[in-house]
Image (cartoon, rainbow, N blue to C red; front, side):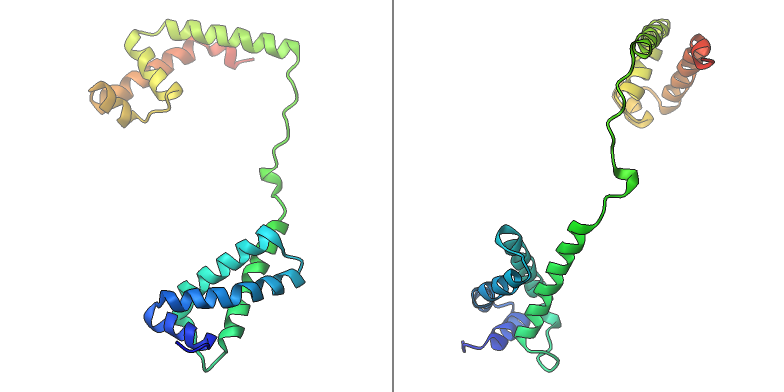
Length: 181
């Protein structure tokens, strides 16, 4: 195989030649590292860009056209574009909607009120029939779908839905004074 990067890239393009790709990688990796260092991209960040760029060379080799660009120009352009993508991604500000602020600590009266509501909810759950309570626990605490509950219990899907609807109606009735607050 000649010592010509364009010939290596053509061998990769036409025959998926791994040996030619290894030579391309060995030839271009230090050159790409130097180019990236001039752009203040060094160390692991540079290694990542080089890996991504050379992976893209392998994946996109079929698009290489030696009449339009030399192998060097084509590979440097891919590496430069990968570096720009990395810069853009790291500079992208976090959307306001995704920023999470620590919630304020609840004061003592809120804690007492929440504990009272939890006690009332536990009592209301105990007031349900065992089948209804089990359905509510599976659906809301276990986060199972109605179909999963049906499969798990062996009950028809309609029965599961009916029991859940009746259980929720009963809970709503037993806890209606909490909703008014």
